[in-house]
Length: 320
Image (cartoon, rainbow, N blue to C red; front, side, top):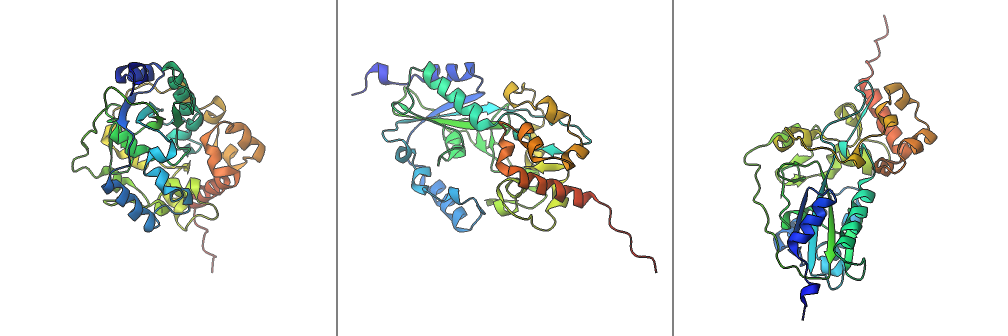
């Protein structure tokens, strides 16, 4: 039998999460994902829409049931942490996806989740575990299930007042809660702005095909980029924000950016010439503790060259 001391008090969890800078927090019973979502995930994987991200298909039983990941799990606590809603690099340089401008979100969110556990008197492993894009957890599903927001047509979570410029994290805990949250109804209506804004046609009414997505191609895919990718990238050499920039829920955000996700002075100052001359040593110094390390030096250089080649004027025809 659970004693009162064993039960999570929902309002306390949310108050502590807010104190740590999370803009949204909700709770749901730990259980298998619903049958409709599980079927969707299996269809998406069977169609190969994950591209080279084979890790999404591994240990699928854990992804579909957090109790398999954390034995004895009773509650999932989902949180969202906002990041800078505006670009902040030199207009005569190159752009990066907004989420990658500052510190690596994996480190920041997990550290704050550990602080949240400590504030609640919980101990990692004994009472549960924190996660942030580092284990087979269906993060967006749980954010929706915990009432943080809804899944937009661009397959990103939309949080009222914060749009989709948020990082997600979870605590999977071995204690029940005194109250749980309910999902929000989607509020995209008939809007298709994100679908129409995708330069690669990666978004459809059925979801995201990662194999066409510029974020996937410039970060996850190894080897040469498909023909025409550089022209679609514009000035962005890492990731893509086009669908998020088109979203009306992101259009008038006024929240302050978390300082952890502000770009460094060195990154702000980078010119196109400096990007073209980027050395391995420059890369390591510029992106120490950054999510950009995911693409590796060779991948980032590949992206820079693709954008540079697409912007170059066509060679003049030989004179007769």
